[in-house]
Image (cartoon, rainbow, N blue to C red; front, side, top):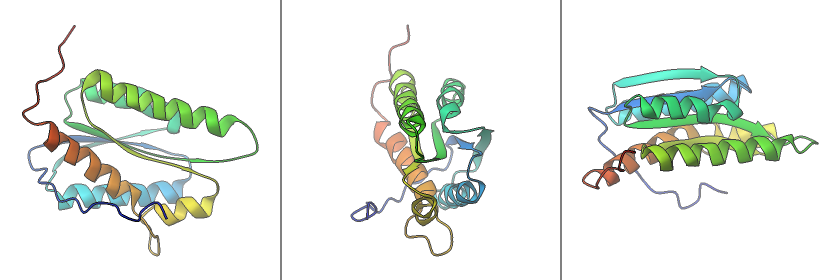
Length: 161
């Protein structure tokens, strides 16, 4: 299971501004991911949270870029892409992953990657943080973003062009 060996993360996020961008596809899974993200933000003491909904995973990078440039300390992205019988899965997964990586690198703002790329709905449900789920990828995405914010404190900011 991919969750084996995941680190225990406890970050004080008080005073941080965090945006959560969530896709709408696969509503049950998305509600679990969002609930997990909200729990992790609350547990970390983050109170300044903005939630933005977009149609799907393909739209996550543009929303994340706008929010990163708007002064948020971190942006958490949540989505689900389930493999089908066409190359669409690969295109959307690649676009979302590459786009979010580009946002993080070009803005210097940590991006929590909570985009599930799975073969079937059962795999998504097991990772969504719902009752009976094995993993809580929404919470893990928040924890990773917050830990990265803390790790980068004191590191020189990116030069502006």
